[in-house]
Image 1 (cartoon, rainbow, N blue to C red):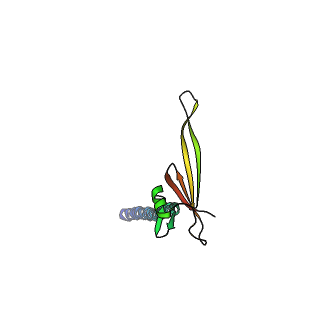
Image 2: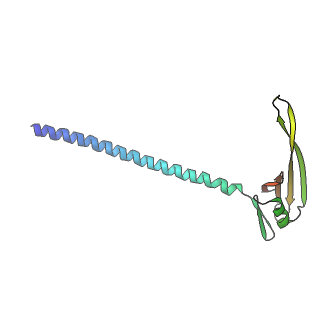
Image 3: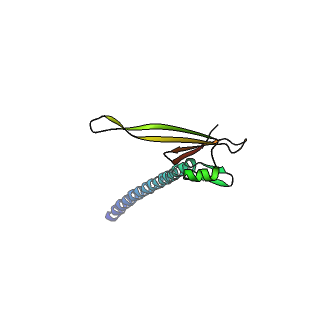
Length: 137
């Protein structure tokens, strides 16, 4: 009878061990699904800004992007059809709290019209550096 009781206790322990093991593997499966979902979302979010950020424009046989210098834009695209320049004063506070003018920010907007069927392109240049290229209407 003692061996029957021992077998019963052993089978109870084995049954509880199997329940724990099954629930652990089920939790692992849920964790794996969550990790995969997180990995897919991270990849999707990481690839979106790359596609949406960099705008470029075609100038004849050349392609000009936001990484181009102003000299390169002029060389490849020529003079813009319209050029707007604005100056904005830059101020900073000194140690006494007074506001002093410390510089000027020069913003240029060059507008290129490639053809009648294409939307115009606007090249924005701040302090001599191309910061954006975008389509306008």
